[in-house]
Image (cartoon, rainbow, N blue to C red; front, side):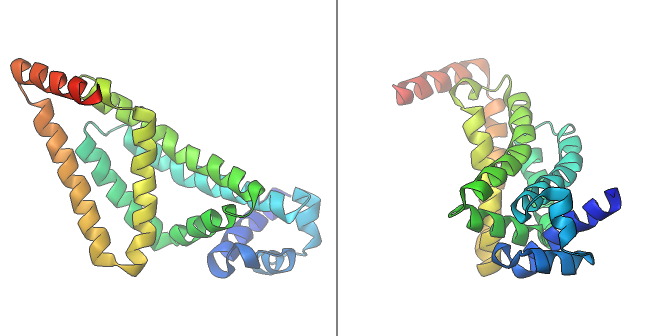
Length: 208
């Protein structure tokens, strides 16, 4: 039974990757999984529930090793470097296509939007915790919305993964710009106490 469920989950992800969400019918998924399509309804109740289970299972499998590697990150630059590595891995595995299809389908399907949002939160949570840790003690920490920044960082990498298919050079330039941002923050962190106080005053004034 467990093997059949896993074959259906793998078949659903393979279908999204090759035929897109629009092509993810019971017949096509079952064909890709090599099982009778009636087993979709036996195990999951509906194609929609299978897509939900497959999306979350695939995301959890990818996030687990990523979260473990995040534990070793000690700076924003290291976080961005790790992001670049994961970006390359996800593209080579074809997961960018799956994510693009889920995001596209979510625009018009509330159920797909809900499961896609849940899947995205699995990525964002570890990033947010890492940002809280690496920014602790930074003179800019009190001015940063860490939750919003985590989402911005992840959204940036998602966008770059999709952007790279159309403009690889532009995507590379964007990644280089993110690297410079990491360097800039390191320079800020190395400021002396007088310069830190001056920076905080300027930032508070800008906020006001």
